Length: 311
Image 1 (tube, one colour):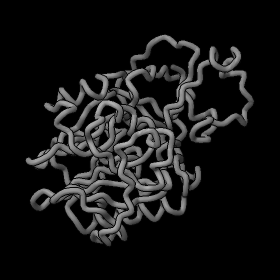
Image 2 (spheres, rainbow, N blue to C red):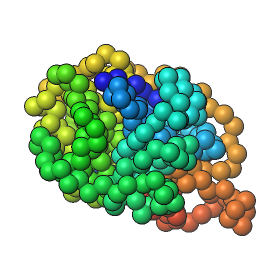
Image 3 (spheres, rainbow, N blue to C red):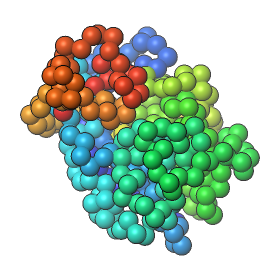
């Protein structure tokens, strides 16, 4: 079994308010930042190549952070197909794609794999990001419990798709068994590993009660099984993978500082940091994003203006 990271963005940041603030702001440090990035993962079982998520759409503009930015993925390393090639794989080799959830930073390049079978929780399949694809198989998690998780679907020998609601109503995680280790590819159950250690929810969820139950289940699994935790939005994801680092919840590592942030020039467009929707004044009667009402919501995911970044 081989697992590799598909690296897309690097040298970004996220605020503690975003990563820790899902159940209240008590104790939140307003200036604390953690490292951020964007990567997805590829699983090579030896007999087939399976992707877990497919990055952002190649045409999505890069973001331009400022003092209000809650999460900045960083500078683009490569588009998804090129990054997959850097990991050693071509689109025609891919037989299956597992989607942790519907957001554009996880589904953006599904169109590059028309011959692969796409698996997603049934609740996610009606989302705009997925409903146009004829090669999507809705998953109902009919294979029963997996360890302490209540519902699962076996995708291949050693590869399990796990129901993990909360971040979205059909959120899922992937667990890969390899020898004595369990690799947990979790999408956005947490945005940074520091939140996992501190038992904190992010502020991005569709069902906070389910998100809490999922994080509790994830932590219970990690306590009882040697787990390498593979995140999407922090370089700790691929660093854990490279080191085969088993998570010890009782002994969190010291956080590394955020590096120098390099940014481009703003275009007047804004990008939703949750779902990837692009607000373009030219397509909205020339109305600048700054002039939208304070209670304006993203047309796709219904998040507020504060979740948008300059592009």
